[in-house]
Image 1 (spheres, helix red, strand yellow):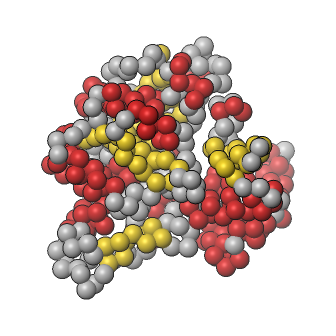
Image 2 (cartoon, helix red, strand yellow; image 1 turned 90 degrees about the horizontal axis):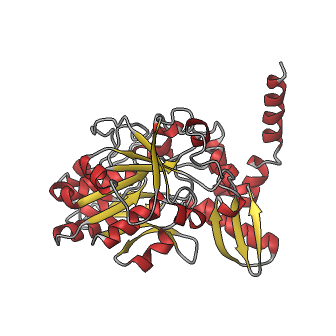
Image 3 (tube, rainbow, N blue to C red; image 1 turned 60 degrees about the vertical axis):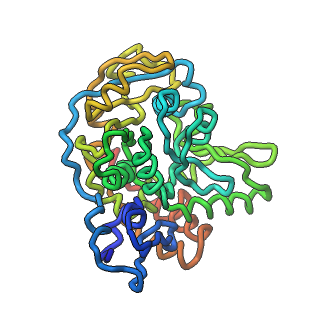
Length: 371
């Protein structure tokens, strides 16, 4: 039976719920929208499978020592980085794989989906800075693998670890592609942010884009689409980068390392302008590709889409989450208490960019810079 001493022990991959032969475990969201396993003791037989399948521990895969800068000229304008994520999924579909990736539903819930045709890949494109719901997905992946299908699963490192653990002896037909993850933000805060913006503007939000590429690859803001207009904001992104609303397990992530549970790691290739002058100086995006296994190397040796690629140094400074997890903000616990008690608007007022605490912190930083 799953027993969590602390929320930091669970990443929410749902592997335990998917593998339980009695169906005794279900994933239940807390007030922040993060899902955790709950066991129905009347159904549990104490077989121990749920505990043995848990993969939230450091990977034993040898650390990779090579990285590539890669970009797909024909995909740049429709991608948030260099187009690697979509190129991987498209190649997989064209090669007969089933693809699993994160998509945003009409109610702005981010969930993983199963895709078998190229036209179904569009919702899987672009970054979603919200934890994706994978409830039931590990079981679906295992069914595909048992049926002899090849599968590409894309997600966070902890999600990939859960999928690999459930796959077990069927791992050979499974290709895992993770991202360099900053940590997953609260699904509940994300939805309440949307509702608050609708209240402020008096219009319904019809779409959302994190890091809108039309503002430039280096720009880190969200764009909300209302009925007939767009609004650029830094509100939700600010809370994310302040580490005020990350899942607790993210600050103790065992996968923030060069040793990963996946075959492929992808990210933005920050610093490419300095490391490879002239390679990607147009602010249109460049991806980072790190391969960990022979299967990943074989799969990424070529693509059906035109690309340019070049070996680049490991991004020690520009991708710190490749080496260590994000550190929780000192006010993260207070943020959660205020949010659960008073709601989003009150939380933003206390912890946002106009709050006295934030303005004081910025003042102190400014003073220190001039000492």
